[in-house]
Image (cartoon, rainbow, N blue to C red):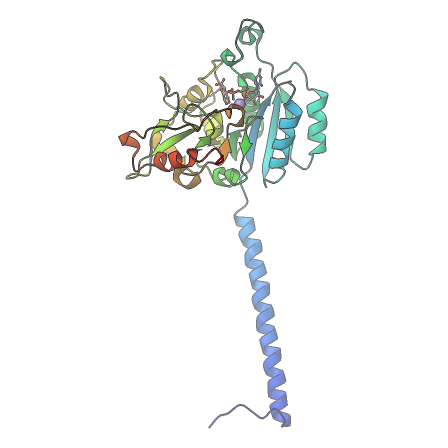
Length: 308
Ligand code: UGA
Ligand code: MN
């Protein structure tokens, strides 16, 4: 019968040394091949670049808000930040900020809102101006001139972004969408996902109005290809209708929309500027929203305020 050799005998000791050597070789071989596999994988799965377009304008909190956003984007891999000032020329404040965060690949542009839409400071309410339209269009032009592939996201300077959001939008095929928190009378705005088909069937928002895409600017990302396929797609100079008009100009159907953030049940971006609710925004759930993601979002917004 075969048995394990006695370690004290010469051939036995030789056998065990040989066995140890063999084990070491196998271990090394395996770890090297794992390393190779990892290298090959990262080559194959090179991350698409996310082009983050941020319109910005001069005001008291501008540099504070841009600093927050810069610190967020510093932590996002494969990102290119396009900061577009609503001004005649680049300001030194934003220039210095971008120099300080030079680890973030970026492009600094300006695109002033035309006088016609700027209105009269005293008689034109701020919310009647097409805020950010001219600067976003300037960025879209730059992308069409300089970029062939990747993903575009419009990140205003005054929102709060969870880092997981960038992970969610990274592999957008056409257009991806998700909820936005702290917005409108319901405290949340979101695409409504049909639980049976998994497709977006309509939009849940405090103001749907006559909009086909009743969403906020922070709620979607698009593939760069769409901009090349629709060379006229742009932001309109019409307050409140920028998202709807822009998405319509991309010639989409509801079925093209890729719901993200766990089927639009997670809030990963907040419209912080509007978060001045005096009480918890609450809403009765219409029957057509039962069983949809809106039901889950409702329970989250009910927990917005801390318990006194
Ligand atoms: C909301 C949306 O959140 C905006 O994305 C959208 O552009 C706007 O509606 C609209 O439909 O016109 P709100 O959040 O109240 O607007 O607007 P702001 O956050 O004050 O401005 C949106 C972006 O444009 C910001 O990044 C801001 O810095 C920039 N902006 C604002 C300018 O570049 N110029 C301005 O005169 C005002
Ligand atoms: Mn805003």
